[in-house]
Image (tube, rainbow, N blue to C red; front, side, top):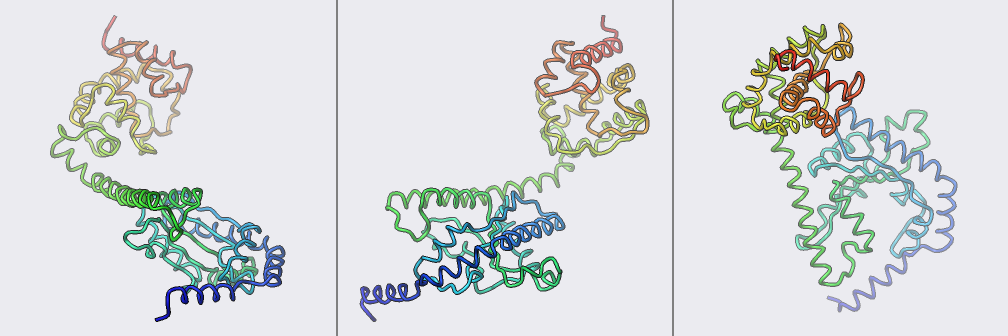
Amino acid sequence: MAPSFLLYRRWFTFRGETKLDNDTCATILAEYDATQAVYDDFARECDSLIKRLLAVKGYRVHSVTSRLKERSKVEEKLKREGKEYQKLSDMTDVAGVRVITHFDDEVDRIGTLVEAEFGIDREKSVDKRQLLEADRFGYLSLHYVCGLSDHRLKLAENSRYAGLPCEIQIRTILQHAWAEIEHDLGYKPGSTVPKPIRRRFSRLAGLLEIGDQEFKSIRDELKKYEARVSDEIRAKPTQVEIDDVSLNAFVRNDTQYHSLIGAMAETLSVSVVPTKGDLKRFATELRSLGLTTIDELRMAVTANQQLILSQLAKRDKVRKAFEAGSHMGDATGLMHLVQVIVAKKGGTQALMEFFGKFGYRASEGTNEESAREIVSAVEACTKVV
């Protein structure tokens, strides 16, 4: 075995021998100047294609961005020792796309999609997540070097991209945060980092890895909760707390609530459709009124159903807001429930404060006019002077 210093010398000589000469660098930079617009368009096309593929599959990600490598960065890379570029396309990251996912298992899912829809250079692509030793710090991503597939290159508008490589990076939000901060600090895996700093990097990398795993675990647990909450409501409604998930199940499945919504729709001569978005807002409003469980909510609906319907029939502004034959969201009953409860307990002032706290805006007239109308209707229906 050669002495370590001899190995180092051979390595240094090899690196020196492969450093690009000035003429080659100048030729490649001239090629960059002549083709940078095509590379920029190519990066944008890969970006657009990935977004279309994600939309078709129904995959949600944090972001998809593209970039053209700056000329100064190309020149800097050409001057590094150990590079063997002969032409611009040998530099695989002139055009680049980055996909940032929410969860770590989505990295591989989107990687599978990229492999199926692009022409992958297997030798140059690398899963950098697998490169780290167990005791090393660093948080890396899945890198593909690829071009458009043969059938996409046959399209006239894509023919100019033949032979061009694009680097597609796929990483989670936390992986991206690590890479960005690490880059800003000037440290990378493999660099000589002072030992105390290296230890802190290592601890932080472990926390981020745990964070990725925990976010995925929370997502999976939420899905399981969504799947079982309807059964829990039927079996033990006194133990199911009101939250946006349980409230959604209640609105969609509760017989008593459906009776209320059906009668409201008949009063307004409208149809009922599922409310768009989550019901977090209504969950917060109900809990602010002291209703914390689904059983308490069900009892409140039963106790106030007739009052809700009676005051609704007396409110001209609400009827004007709905045209005959239009529709209302199935969470509308929750809105009228909380308004009736607040009006009964505190009158106009309390209702206006409630509107302000939760961001209500009257569809007809002002918030004060709506508050007075609701209170007047409630008082008339309950014969309160």
